[in-house]
Image 1: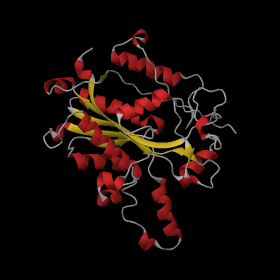
Image 2: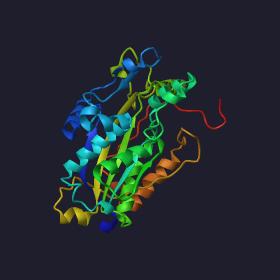
Image 3: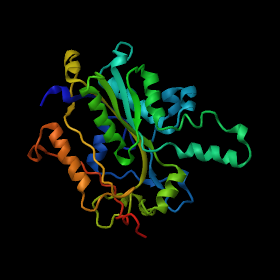
Image 4: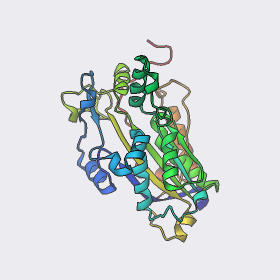
Amino acid sequence: MPQLSQAAITGIGLITPAGQDLDAVWATMCAGRSLAQKDPELAGLPVDIACRVKDFDAVAAHGPRLARRMDRFCHLALSAARLAVVDAKLDPTSWPSSRVGVVLGVSSNSLDTYARQFALLDQGRSTLVSPLALPRSLPSTAAAEIAIDLGVRGPSFSIVNACASGATALGIGRDLIAAGACDIVLAGGSESGCARMNATCLTQLQALSRCTDAPHRASRPFDADRDGFVLSEGAAVLVLEHPDHALRRGAHVRARLRGYASTSDAYHPVAPHPEGTGAEEALRAALTNAGLTPRDIGHVNAHGILTVAIPPVGGP
């Protein structure tokens, strides 16, 4: 397959409940240790468990002024992007900024900010509503803040595609490199979904696990008794490079992104097609795009969201 359609992965940045570097995250995953626990911010709600990033101080990471300007999902995204750039041994002060892009997947904005600001509005205190309430909460703000911080002057935008937002961002980043628009793309995803409104809405949808008395037993994707997922937060950013660019600077290539595809079921707002037709089409298209066959695949990473089947359109 021509190298032009590939992207070399040369850097990884992680800010997650499982750890804030690759070794820590991998160790936690291999240990199979649950990170779900009672969350004081969700106290009093029917579902009060979550997985939060611990030992992360936004003020220490970004300074008081920048931290105040951003919401939590942006705090996490910017820190992950900085770590990815360091891991790739790139210098933002000397890279070709107009040939660098940012594509970040963010499936929702911060409902905590909106809840606080709407409360002021409902109390008749509109003059106290922050002028930053809207811009700091937009999904596109995370990519914009990364571009500002690292001096990225190429394409910069966010992908809003529900649970597939981060994966889609990687595919779009690869496409920007394949199209010759960028030599480097910072691609990944960020989310901070532990707001009380998130918990309430998803509880009403019967999407969250009710294992509140035994959080360590919640979120078992392939368990016959699975009852939903656990709210969480985190960010992951990869440095994607054109293979020739990575070769010229002697970068360590961790992996290659060879193929990508995206399809739609055209079936239901939140449920997949019961026959999995869209997923099958996406897999086949991605293999074709990568120039591979099913026999070439050694690992499949499943999106086990743990929710029970949702009635079809028009159902009760």
